[in-house]
Length: 261
Image (cartoon, rainbow, N blue to C red; front, side, top):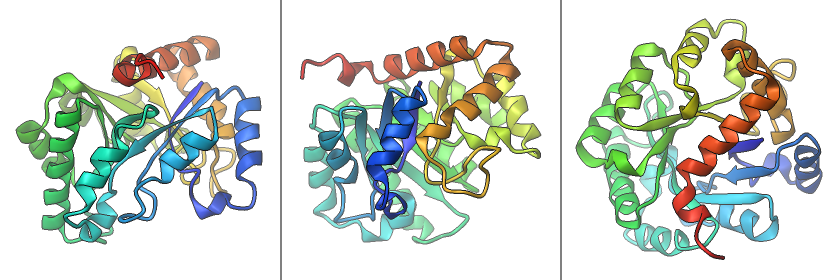
């Protein structure tokens, strides 16, 4: 299995990061994509540090919408340089968060657009964070993104109509622990609709642990619980679901994964 979205740089793993990685590997999670948003600018290489230290990790770079207000003129050149790292496969997570509004919405939109420009320049796929901002997210993507480059709606938790909009823009869908929650029927309906070649597994660790660990710190070792629930939903064996989601990940990020080290 591949965990397509995790934050093991989080201080919640400071006491047992190596042990958490070992548990993930023992659980069959062979690759983890470390999301490089870190604490926000100027801390931009959080995922690169993990990828350098641990063979099982790939990395992204980007500024989370929560930290858009911390972006300066120095941020984008730094991101451009970090994105050249051989294990950096994507720009993300980027997007809009109107739930917390930790950054002004106009600044979030400005930074989102600039990240899209950078990803287009570097010919990298993107990883999207959107919360209570679906309409604006889609509008910006329609205006400023090249669907041919692909990307992921991370922690997708919308319905069928939103999935159709994302599919029209050539996106994949990161499905995590929320799919196991008792009240997530709308998401499960969408997960039943999404084409199998567009599904990725993720944990978003340390957040959103699946049942039976809900409310506890999440970690990549819990990914099999999400995979099992999704496999049952789609009428697949666990091994079939694991294989196809791994293939989906490698196809989406193939431009960087196929480059020589």
